[in-house]
Each structure stands twice: as structure tokens, then as C-alpha cells.
Amino acid sequence: MTTTTPELTSVTPARTRLPSWSPWAFAAGSLVLAFLVLLVLSSPTPAGVVLLGAVVYAVALTVTSRVVEGERRANDRLATTLVTFAFALALVPLVSLLWTVITEGAARFGPSFLNTNMVGVFGEMTEGGVYHAIMGTLYITLAAAAISVPIGILTAIYLVEYGRGHLARGVTFLVDVMTGIPSIVAGLFAFTLFTLVFGPAYRAGIMGAAALAVLMTPVVIRSVEEMLRLVPNELREAAYALGVPKWLTIIKVVLRTAIAGIVTGVMLAVARVIGETAPLLLTVGIVADVNWDLFDGRMATLPVYAYRQYSQGGIGVERAWAAALTLILIVMLLNIVARLVSRYFSPKASR
Image (cartoon, rainbow, N blue to C red):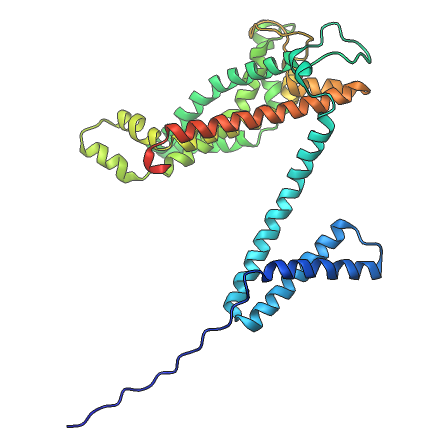
């Protein structure tokens, strides 16, 4: 009886891994080296040190990782480095914008600024606030959302659940075209429409709401459509199998499942239009006090208020920066509310 000896297979030894703190060490060393190089060549600047240090960091870490850890791990570190640098680069204008608005607007921002209007304020008087513009912005934006959100959601439901053939393709094409419409065109459209109906002297908040609704509607349609397409077809088929009609399936299953994404899409649309200046400048203009009548008279809004105050110069520049800070805070609060709504009203399985 013969016995066979199993063949011995060679096992490739595992490569050495760089320690977890090595990226931080390479980053510090790269910044020091970049500073020294720029110090020899010319006077170093923070931006130059960071840019040169980033290049040195990417090259040094990748080469070292290729020697120590191998090609696969080196490629992974290089991809991670590039993605991190791209993220940091994208944050630069955002952080710079927020820092500028906060530092410039904090000088006049406060309770008195938020609770007063511009009645009786002229020239370089230090009084005056933005209360009337806040109310006008919220009022007009709410009216625009009341117009555009139902239209956008129903259109998205049609495109996803019912739309077929040339009509659906035509609606999709028109939505794509409307997405790129300049805001001034929406303002001219609303101005012309209401002028033809009510006369050239007519000014009202509903004109601005209609202009903003034209800008909001395609954003709502696109975002809601994408959220509805993410709902698995198995959920629809399960409801149909239980005898649930299609319209009730859409309300109870499809919309209920996609509620978090729908709310997020609506808030993106609101953030898209709440800072528009050109259409509101054409349609509602500016006043010094609160106008609670949406269908008669001019209304003040934060974008137009900031534009007018900045154009006046002097202390108006401080009011403009404070108005910009107020607008950013309003958008942040609306996004927090949207997060809470999507969290507590979305299905438990998607939390």
C-alpha cells in the first residue's frame, strides 16, 4: 500500500502595516517641509504651505505605503487621500462664507434688530431692524411652498406610477428645462401675468410667491421623483396582492416609505428660493413695515432688504450683513425642522 505525501504550498507572508498614527505624522512632517521649502524660495503663506504640504503628503505616504505595505494598500491610501483633499477643498468656500457673514453680521445682529422695522428710520440713524422683512420672507415662501409642493408631488407621482409614452417624456423634458430657468425670468413671468390680469400698478406678495413657485416646482418634482423610484416594487406588489387599490397603495405605502426623502427634497427647494432677490425685487419691492395682506400691497423680504441696505452704504452695510446672517439662520432652522419631521414620521425600519 502506497501513501502519497501532500504537496507543501508556500504561504506568502503578510506584509507589514504602517502604524495607525502614520498619516498624522506624515501630515505634520509634510507641512514642516513645505514651510521650510517656501521659506528658502520666498515668503511662505498659509495657503501655499497647505497646498505644497498636501502634495508632499500624498506623494510621501503613497511611496512609503507601496514599499512597506504593497501596491494594493498604497492605491487605497492614495484614493483616501484624494477624496479627503477634495472634501476639504469643497469646505473652504463654505467655511469662508459662513465666517464672513458671521463676523460682519454679528455687529448689528441682536434682539432689537430682529424685533424692529424701518418705520421712521432715515439716513445714518442707528435704529431700524429686520422684523418686517423676516415676516415677509416667511409669508411669501410659505405661500410659494403651498403652490409648488402639491403640484410637484402630484407630478412626481404621475411620472413614477402612471406616466407612460410621449406625455410622460414631454413632462420630464419640460421639468428639465424649468430647472435651468434663471430667477429673473421667473420674476418677469409673474410680473407680466399679474400685470395683464390686474393692471400695471398692482403689487402684492402673491406675485413674489408665484415667481418663487415657478423656481421651486421643478426642484420638488425631481427630488420627489427620485425618492419614489427608490421605493422597492416588492412593497407595491405586496399591497396589490392584499387587494389594496393603487391610489391607496401610493398614499399608505409609497409616500409613507419615501417621506424622509420627500421632506428633504422640499426643504432643498425652499432653501433654493428663499434667498432669491431678482424676482422679489421686480414683484414685491420693499416697504418699511409689515404687510400682512398677501394679495394687496408691497412686502419686504430679507434678500431685497439686504440689497437695498447695502446699496445705501454706511450703516446700511451693517444691516445688510445682519440680514444675511438672519437668512442663513432661518434656513438652518428650517433644515432642523425637516430633519425632525423625517425622523419621527418615516417608517421605523428606515430610521
